[in-house]
Length: 119
Picture 1 (cartoon, rainbow, N blue to C red):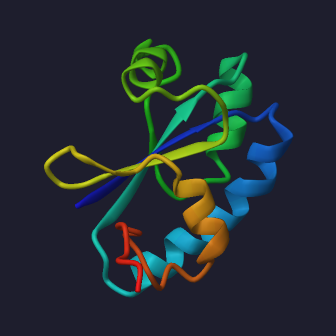
Picture 2: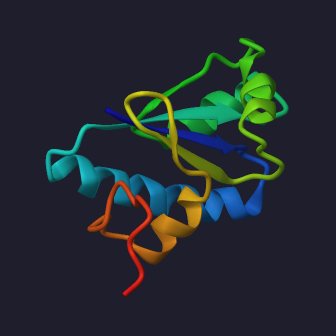
């Protein structure tokens, strides 16, 4: 399985613009049979905002009060949102700029966006 860690928040305008793109891309990738799961890691300021925002997403999330979000952000050197980090099945980082990958490949044709050789 490829795992996407999606750092985002309801109050963040760039996040609210990117989330529907990610949802659409995710559905296309899953529709082609790829083993891909996304986990929402919230920076929301209230549990109500978290629940409302999560309802727009077809994937799972870290529980709002888990406390692991900040720890993961620190471990993965995440400094802003929205950020999508893709992890291989062994936990190694495929890309820490999944947001750009999605925006450049909205149909997910090149998923999982491993580095491609330069010709």
